Image (tube, rainbow over all chains, first blue to last red; front, side, top):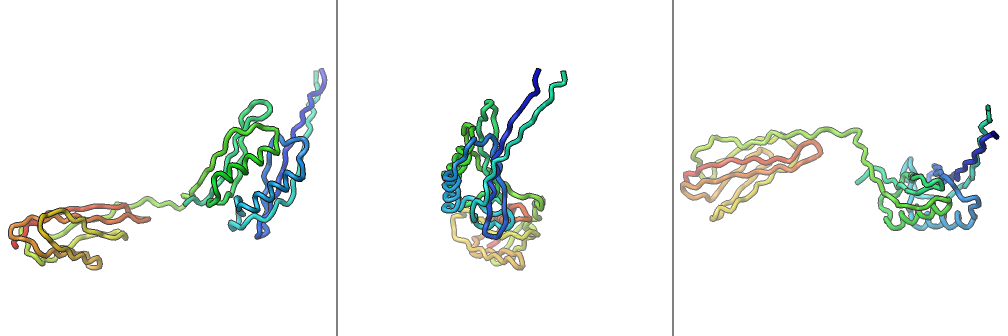
Length: 80
Length: 155
């Protein structure tokens, strides 16, 4: 029997609001390749439609600050 | 109005399991269709299958206080009264007190004094029975209430 290898990934979107407050949104099972254009479109949509507010003072959405794809590999050793 | 509005994105993951992602601190005045589109755009960054979107509004009830039933009664003995007699009522709440006017057939006028808590009835006919129906509005502290009493007027 071989070791068991698992790969999991998340995409963490860090957003910034006009009062300087930041907030993270985590998506499970992100695509292998997220295009910059997709994030640009998402950012534009959020800015144009005032959909999200800051959690400290209800501040207006500023922009998407960063998008990070986090991969985790676990290797469970075969002990047999 | 809710204190906090959130979205729940429902999806099916590659292992065919149901999953959710919460999007918190949503603008409560935002258009629902645009909020739905937002969750679909977020889901399109994943390999999950979009199922549905819920909007959740929550209210902070940490400081909620049970509302009290106010004391609301019309005083003065039943019996015969005269037109122009001042009838007092008791109300210990902080709502507004109104008179509910029944259809009595002839025209009566009611003067409500909310400071001294009295009602004065004018224009009654001899031997007329008049029923006072008072209504107090509900407030943050007090429940709404009604009270009623009938009087026979001498004239």
